[in-house]
Image 1: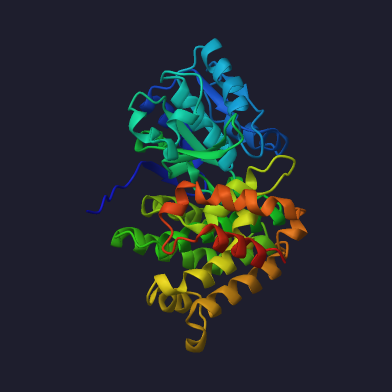
Image 2 (image 1 turned 90 degrees about the vertical axis):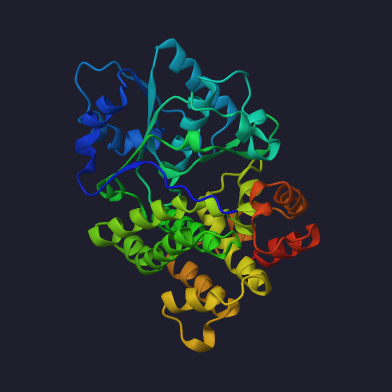
Length: 382
């Protein structure tokens, strides 16, 4: 049986930020907690959002979101939410503030003092109810699509990087203004853009039956492929920024099909202690090897993907698509492999073990064994 659901209220266009005050009134949010990070503050993006809020609105700001959000950061933000009597959250930034906001919105309204019992791999989705505090998500990158997704990825106190997920965690409003992505530097434009591309292609390749999601994923895949290089080369390219914001949103709209081995690998890699690894960049590095690995399990899907990417018929296969992605990575300045990102060899087995326990392992079209995960890591080493 196929579960097909779409999704939440979305305001999308240049200038959409001007709708914020009216949208907050519709949601009944009068004392918001702003969840963001110091980079968003420094870039002046919070200032642009603040201009659209009523001058007399009580505001609390948590700007301590780490690059990879943690339970400890969630508790700090939660304490502020409770102390200030907040009644909703405005998440501003990339996937990290939005994922952290989901953790706060959950724990502000549900029992317990830890997120781990609510993790998907712990069977926690059934414990999450409609009591979740309302979230308004305002993305400043075009990658994660967390503004329309039901999931958030958090590094737990145990050290595991786990996903919480439920339809109740989808932000009540996604306010997507591509103008806010215009100042994103090239390396982050590339990394987040390849995150969007990976979301779309992994969801399309998933064997779950959901034709509407397939259509959306193919559109997002095509947009990301066509515009990520333009947006990286020229951040002021409004057409490219608009289409990358749409590709990111579409990639997350189809998460209900499930992701795959790329994310099963990038989640534990991003959770390694002692490293600062960008999630989208990891996805880009792992993607070529996983595309080749998946070929026996996805039928003729690579022919459709290759056609959208403009590849010749002789390259309409896993190898052709993977080679094209690797070449795009090189043009975008993505690191040539995990070794170039600073990883040490002793991490390989830990990553493989983490991938086997990741929720995305369950939805990948061809499930690797532990030994095959190790091979995929080694092939992605560079």
